[in-house]
Image (cartoon, rainbow, N blue to C red; front, top):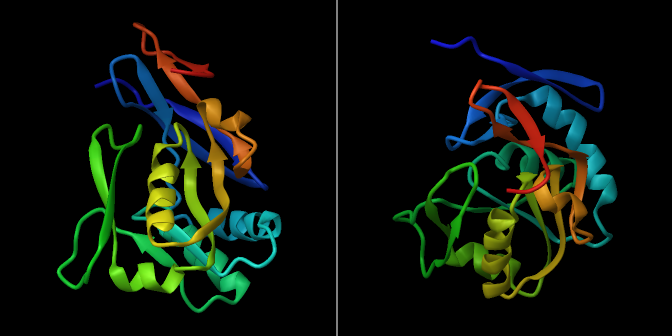
Length: 195
């Protein structure tokens, strides 16, 4: 078994060693997983909140890695509720809406579901979409499609990190540029701007 290699990462004074992982024979990531990283989320959440426009009524994210970030941001903002698009249709959902997406991290097609009660909650409201990383934009786009189907007004798209061409998007808020890597035959990882 090959020795695990790591990418040295720092955000707002929080340092991490992110393991390199292959997502295909020629593409790799420095795996950024914030779902259980309380220290990193507590550093990032207030910075993202500062950058959101005024008058956001609800925060919305997709299951699962954005949940802890969305929770902390909602707590800071004094919001009693935030909305989560689920990766499967749950038995409790009444009149759910859905959208199908391909994600670079899951490497497969998946469908996101929004409970009809959550759709009603955000109808006519100003919503900020929250994710951990925006890479190809497919995931945040799927969340946005659900919000729009529900009748919400999307006023912001925010993430801790942006990758690939998303770093040039003017319609997203992010704290740091991150990398996707080409994987060499020798197991080396080289940052790339696009796939």
